Image (cartoon, rainbow, N blue to C red; front, side):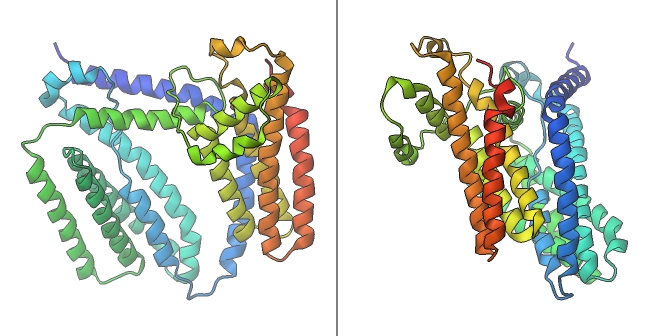
Length: 403
């Protein structure tokens, strides 16, 4: 006999164990220390920055823009698997409680993230608004209600296969969330807020009526769930081997000119292989670009003086450490072991590539400090960054690069 309660408990338990197993590798001792340092340093400079702002700073619009992103992005973690296309479709009508429980867990997790984001912004809001901290709880309650509305609408939109419907819904919901959040932060008239609530109700009812006779789009639901888990597995793979991770590769022909600097010879085989893998894999190239951009912006806007040096070294460490799995990227491919090349050349080729990448990042950080008009600090950042990179690549990383 079909038991949806049993299926949901098994799926939820399996997912929790799967995620928990990899989380302990992600938050290892080194990363926890770095994150604590980053949070502490960021909080210090954040407070310094807030104190330098005038009362006319547009905190409300900035908060509304950011919070609306977290409100609009409201997926339901449905716990579906590929095989469900065959085995669960016949009992679709009996899965209402299954999806309701999934929606409840999704709401709790995303509501917690929303709480953290609002808490981060409250010192800024209190600086420009005398009632800032006293409004924290009312703001949170209303935003959680809006979050629930977004999740309900997003679920109804999943009944449509047309991409245009999904795009327009996201656009409409974002600007609706933006308007409501801004009015809340500006403490608008209650009648205006009631009118916005009426808009939310009518919007949901419209799609609720349109989808009542439609069936679930199982392909879309399963595809979204697989993409979410693939993103998590890619993150976990930076710290440990993930056997059930699907690799994503993009051609990126426009970056081929970078490979032309590598001589065409047998001794540079691994150098070419690692370089090509770095450029084509979304995991490594995307990671490098994101950390470089975030680090450069943090150095330029948040930190000053000695803090710039600390931020630079911190992001160099995060980048280098998370690029180490690239060395083992092809370890399960038999054809790589057939190369008539000495094993030590593999490590040498990887270390050279890693040194080039983190040195480019150090130079970019130096450039951003130079743009701020601090040439001495920029030179110090470059020199300490290069020294740190050499120690990391050729001393620290040896134990991670065992052929």
